[in-house]
Image (cartoon, rainbow, N blue to C red):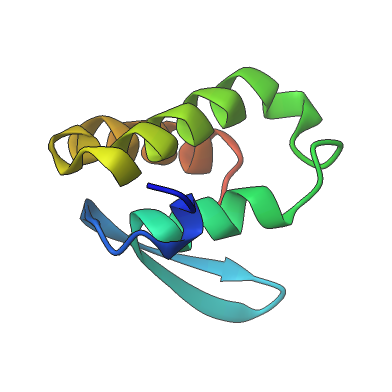
Length: 85
């Protein structure tokens, strides 16, 4: 896939998180990729390894929907560690 953020591949779970007082639902690979890449790497610095793993998993799932479980698990780990869940 040329652009990961365009992927409509469904994740295995829909994440509902609050950011700046607004509730955000993340249900697709593209939405998740946009969310975790929208912030600068400085903001993810403390969780760099988890962020890189989630990003790589989303990139892989954008090209192969069979990998959406791995991407979902990587996102869950990142969001749980950053207290977004």
